[in-house]
Length: 124
Image (cartoon, rainbow, N blue to C red; front, side):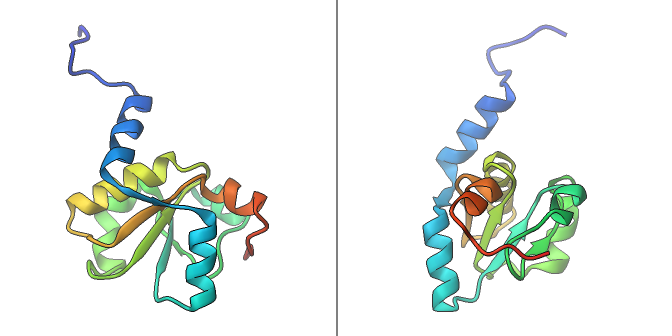
């Protein structure tokens, strides 16, 4: 198989997704929590990452099963902040969720690493 102009690298896919979605900062998420906003914090990392710690009251759906699982677990009209380890998988997940009809979805820039580095509360 030969490469064509349409072929994209993983970096390009993430870059494109980040232009289609909304990103929120760790500070934005901490403010949402402080206000008690009804938000689903969706962790799309792998099981081993989840086991090491997560945002308080997070919902776990690994990126690999998002499309086949999200509709049963999270209603489309729910406010969702998606996060992964560094912000790339969550950008792709947010992009996918928008295509599936989720309108109030954002990706947390910097992911769980940025959350932990900023002193965010960690559960687990």
